[in-house]
Amino acid sequence: MGPQLLMAGRAAWALLLALAACAAPGAARADAALHATVAALDAELFDAFNRCDDPAQLARHAAAFDPAVEFYHDTGGVTWTREAMLDNTRRHACGRYTRQLVEGSLQVHPVAGFGAISQGRHRFCDAATGACDGEAEFTMVWRLHEGLWTVTRVLSYGHRATDNR
Image (cartoon, rainbow, N blue to C red; front, side, top):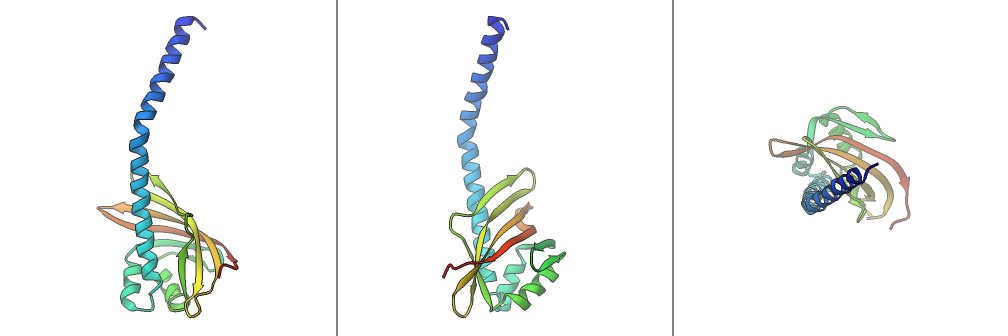
């Protein structure tokens, strides 16, 4: 490789590194803003879930999901619609247990032209006693459409007993 080509290659790499350094703060701010948005949506979604024995809260919870949401649960199976998912929530969750996000576990990844993917761990706590003896992983696909965020896919898996009381 000739010295001129080597210098041109180094200059190109230097330019790419400089551009990446300039873009990084903006990208970091965008990622932080997206993380904050999805974290707030997650908190709102599960605040309603935790009080879903109140029909108004169940309706608030339902509004966060696309009508054609797919919910994959490792022990409960698959539901293909919001109504089927809500029926399971009414029968098995409301008034029985609450969900807590494991602090520091939420990760948010942008999906270009669509929305975001969130991942994390959550605990399930007995509504009567407050004992949190179950934990699982989750992944949710969030769609941003016409200014409204909705969940289109949910994976809830790795359910296990814990001793986090």
